[in-house]
Image 1 (tube, rainbow, N blue to C red):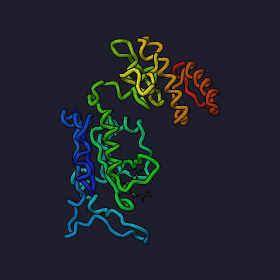
Image 2: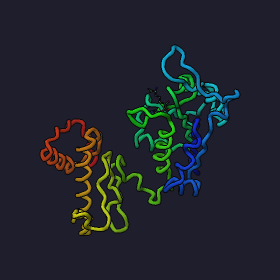
Image 3: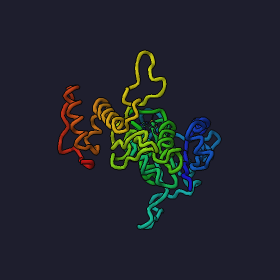
Image 4: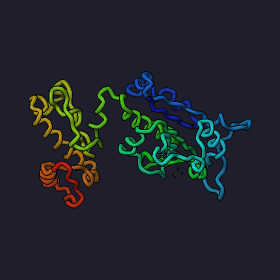
Amino acid sequence: MSMRFEIVTIFPGFFSSIFEHGIMRRALAEERVTVGVHDLRTFTHDRHRTVDDRPFGGGEGMVLKPEPLAEALASLGIEPKAARQPAEDDPPRTRVILLSAQGRPFTQAVARELAALDRLVLLCGRYEGVDERINQLYCDQELSIGDYVLSGGELAAAVAVDAVMRLVPGVLGNEASGEFESFGVADAEITTDSDGVPRSQHGSGGLLDYPHYTRPAEFAGLRAPDVLLNGDHQQIRRWRREQQLRKTLANRPDLLENAALSKEDRKVLEFLRQETGSPSLRSDAISTDND
Ligand code: SAM
């Protein structure tokens, strides 16, 4: 069973090479995922193939008109939400998403949720955005890829497709590796490889990934950490976990509030906080799944 992405855009050419590399290319070649790119202008009926119009109430810029978008969605078999009747025990397998700076943050957790669906329909805005009635009538979710404003939804759609598709079962060579990266699953679910080394990422439990090194052991006067070269898997695990905590504390201390932290983690964090002079965590905000 493969997952289908439908992208509605006024710039279909934007996607002509974007999926031709690496994991995405392989996933498409193996038909684990498929992508349809739909030119919004196909759904216009005037000589100029007009997709936008001036905003009611005045103001800057143009707005994507609702009719072509509604037609594009109809061509994909998407009805207005009011006409969809999902059975209670059978939640919808398709989701219609509007890429928007006003949307909920797109996170790894959202990517995981979306990867469990059969089909994602991604509407790319342009100009000042999309007529709000399209959002109201058709969209299940508005997603933002970050607190900044892009010129169009195409880059955001590409980001979403990339992050979701690599979580579709079978897409990553190593079935579990998506769980062992930054923002991955809890430590309790960590497995090891055939040599007993915790996989590329020990369960990051909402933490950032640890730093990675490869050959040569010495580069530009810097040696890869000895602990990674000595073959002691317990020590490697401990070092990697400490590095995760260190990096998360330095770059994304907010993640520590919801991370699954063991007693050992908290001891390490306390040490790191003293070392770096970072403020203490709220102890009641720390979950202790691994205690
Ligand atoms: N007037 C809009 C606002 O202030 O929120 C910005 C419109 S933006 C120039 C044009 C389109 O880019 C949006 O309709 C949306 O599809 C896309 N876009 C911009 N920033 C985005 C973000 N952070 N995440 C997802 N899509 C974004």
